[in-house]
Image 1 (cartoon, rainbow, N blue to C red):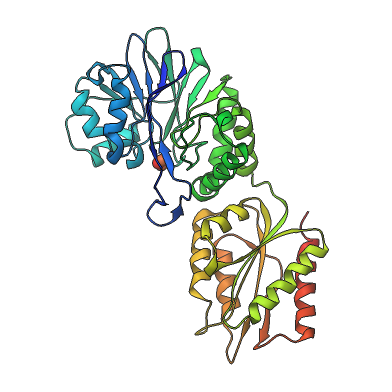
Image 2 (image 1 turned 90 degrees about the vertical axis):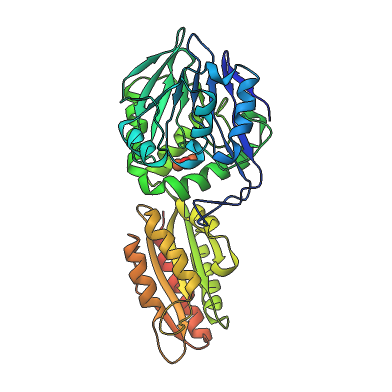
Length: 395
Ligand code: FEO
């Protein structure tokens, strides 16, 4: 895809990775691919904001060549060192050997630990301004959103924010702006991205947005490093980040279960009915047949998480353990939860699940429900009541 002007003299020169299906190793399933966005600013000083993955750097260089000779680049801003954004750095610097590299102090440390050449680094901190000629870039450190080195930069003259990973989506498209694409799909992917990458840093997200508001920055456009550029709806994604960051939830529950001979599944269906009787929207996932990122994305704005498994070898079915390990890492705030499941001659699943739910900071609001072998009608009624009682706790 060719370079595209996003503001006068500011060009998207990124690349589209249509085929990417896994990100961060196997942990994030990118069903719709992704983009690596970089931006070229043509002013008295030619500046590149963010780079791309190493496999795509020659495509980026060709996009830059449509505008300027890469050897004319004066400044390279590395907002974030993770290789999907900096992997192309050594190749870029072969073409732009005179460029000065701007990054945070932690960014410089990380760059030196990734790339060992003799490059000209300048470190910047919040409030520092890089004059480009008619325009300028103001830097805003954003440590742990989502790496220690992360930072944003802001072009005041165009009210344009470059927040790197923040506000991104793993979404490949031949159209680069939000208003050229289906908003439901964009918001679905933005939510999935937040739930699976930024959720552990939710407190920092809220504080960073508050800080930007206090700085009085007017934002007309947000140009993240993945996915679509927020041209028409920048306020919408900021509002959503505040909601997600604060852990706001809807009247919703997620049941994630797995089952050996369908007893736990029958219990789960009765629990759904109980929750539904209280008007709770309930998402129902058999873990081994579901995409774990779909489950975590639904948990982001659900109040209750119910995890269930048959007992096998005195513990839970391993797929359920994988989900719980994800929840421990993602640290969603303010969730309530409970566990249930069937067993044969020995228990174990519910106790193991409750332990891991507590590790994930989920507040266990009801004692686990266990059924021996096959649930009777009476057992299913108890499951219904179990769901109903939890439903009453969800506002
Ligand atoms: Fe898109 Fe943290 O890299």
